[in-house]
Length: 132
Image (cartoon, rainbow, N blue to C red):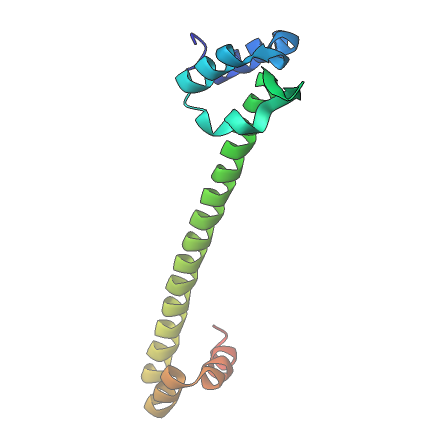
């Protein structure tokens, strides 16, 4: 439990004691999972011997915990990245349309500005015309 706050130290400990941790009795496994708040791993890492649960594989439990954390991290990162990309895209689109409208008004082309505000095809043509 003293390595609980230091991931690298905990991982090193697990690697150095893999054989012992791979064949852990049920009571020890139960205590460790409870103290590390890993209750969701109980059913995943039991080995069946003579129709009874006698032994637990703590190495697999730790690996699954790490894998689950990585998966959650990826999902959060992807969600944040998508939100940022959408926000950036909206900002760029607004900036681009604002620049087009400004140029059209300066050139006295209010009708084209109105069309650009309403129709994507008109905007596309005018973006090309103004190299925006």
